[in-house]
Length: 230
Image (tube, rainbow, N blue to C red):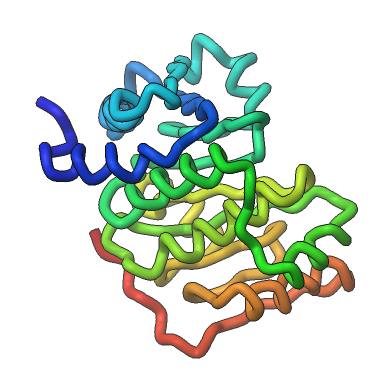
């Protein structure tokens, strides 16, 4: 039985009609001990069936360990979204609920080859000289999470030194505990800067600039944390 109903398929097909350049979804799953691996693979394949520009490659996390290592995949299920090259855009956990829209927007962005970031943001990102790892913890029912995840993915697209992950908090509870995720979205940059809520681009870049200045920090955007729910 398809995961997407007819209405959603029609809507997604229309959105993907603007995809001009090829996009590859590299999916990592596992036969056992992976609750949403099958659904993640099925979802990627259903999306790909809606556009001739999208293709899917599926790998087994255990059997294809070298390939997982090549893509920097360390947990499953996982989707790497590739365009003309690998921009470091990753989704860990099934992109369902609000995060399904994130997957579609990632595809559109990667196909276009443009991050869509503001000129001032691009200037800041251009100063990055060391690797940056951004993790955005989310849940499918969080309406604020896609904004935070997409901004992180746009930063990854802008710089080869930046890698950005969507991490579904309930599927990876050990990580959520490690980073004290009590609400979502929660953005963690290089394990040092932790940000609560979906910050507008200029505010996030003020936090991001701390990396360039060698500072650590934790910031809140003034909104109350959205309680984890699913």
